[in-house]
Length: 220
Image (cartoon, rainbow, N blue to C red; front, side):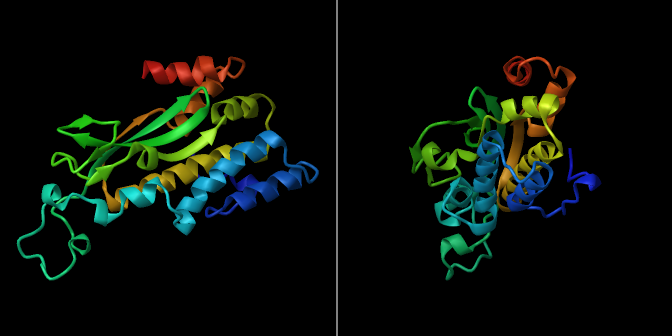
C-alpha cells in the first residue's frame, strides 16, 4: 500500500478530516460508528505528528532525557552550550514493533541494554541510552483499536472510504516512523505492519482476523 488511489481524489497530504469528508460523500452524509472509532484513534496519532502534544514520540526525542555519558560528546564540542544542545557521537538506539493483538493495532518502542530489548521502568542506568525510560509514557507511539477487525470488514463489506481509512492509518504510522528515524537510531523494525496485515487478510477474507492477522504475526 502507498498513498491513495487516484479514484479517491485525495491528496498525498490528506488528513483524517479529508477521509471523513470522503466517507460522507459516498455514504449519504453518514459516518458509521465503526469508522468513527478507527478514525478517532488515527486522528489522535495524526495530532501527535502535527501539533506536538505531550506523547511518547516527544519524550523519546527529548534530548534532555538522553544519556550523553553513554552516547558520547565530540571532543571539539562547545562545552559552554547546554548538554542537550550538543549533537552526541551517536543517537539513542530503539526498536519499533508493529503489534496486532485482540484489541487492535499498536506501534511500540523499546530501548536496548547490552543489545537486549527491555520493557520495564529504568532510571539512571549507565547501560541505557536514556536517562529515564518509562514504558507507561514512552512505549506506545500509535494505538488503533479494532483495526484488524476493520480490515476484515473492509475486505468483505467495505467501500472506497473504508479502504482509504486503512491506507491513511498506514501512511500516518509511516510518517511517525520516518520522524523517529530523523531523530534517533531506529535499529530494528519488527512485527506485522498494517499493509502486511492487510495483505495476509486479503488472501483469506472469509476467515477471522484473529485466525489470519494475529496468528500470522505469532508465526513471524
